[in-house]
Image (cartoon, rainbow, N blue to C red; front, side, top):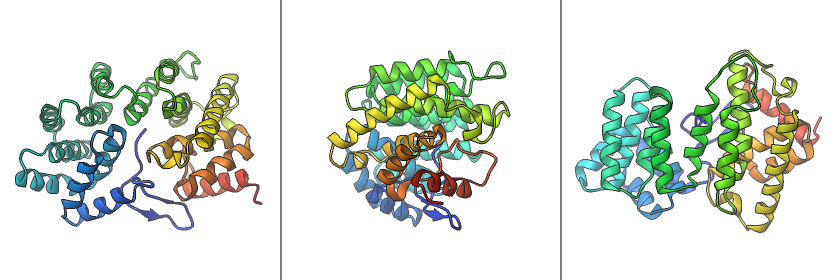
Length: 320
């Protein structure tokens, strides 16, 4: 899935959303980096250590800024041996390439250089996967994903990206229940360690397929009318995911905040539960997500997202 646009902002009468989610240290470092001060990013990444999921999330958010590559380059000039500076520069250059401001070849070379400086770190390969989704073929994406997984088998963002890549492979004019994205998500969920948020990946796969079908005009752009969430397969996936969330959320104090990107999973599940018609369960999830709740990225692709979110939240909370 593609992360939302950079920056903390509030659409008029709409939900606030910050891609840093509940990572206050990341938000502060990102804001400093926008102003050309990279020392906070340096300290943040040093503290992150080998928490690979958190590191990937932090590097991606820091790298999305339009000036991030310039400031990362300045940091690298000051500390040429810094693997953190190298990976931030590589990821920022990937985003420049995705915006058409740099070449994919330059971005790939910087990613490989960053990977050579920190062989255990999956983050440079996550950046390669981000680039390959837009500019590479299936084999390149698969190789990048394999490199990430070789370093961290349950890498959250990489699995989301592969689900999005596979979902975008479209043959025919309908949703195939045997589509490869569903097999991939089921396999990843089965392979995930106990307590891993990858248990929710089948929901993400179902959501990504809806996004692709809706954008292609192959299903109703209103998720509630599309019937995509009412099939037996979808209901089974949602039931299993909600049961996992109940066990995980009640059994792990402060669990949602453990890794900010888990809020992305819960947001997917909340909207899917709403469109399935299970408003009480959706309300429980929206309440747990709190101020970070926003529209799911696949919801209502042809309608105003703020209005769609408000309608979904009112229905889920039983407010007229």
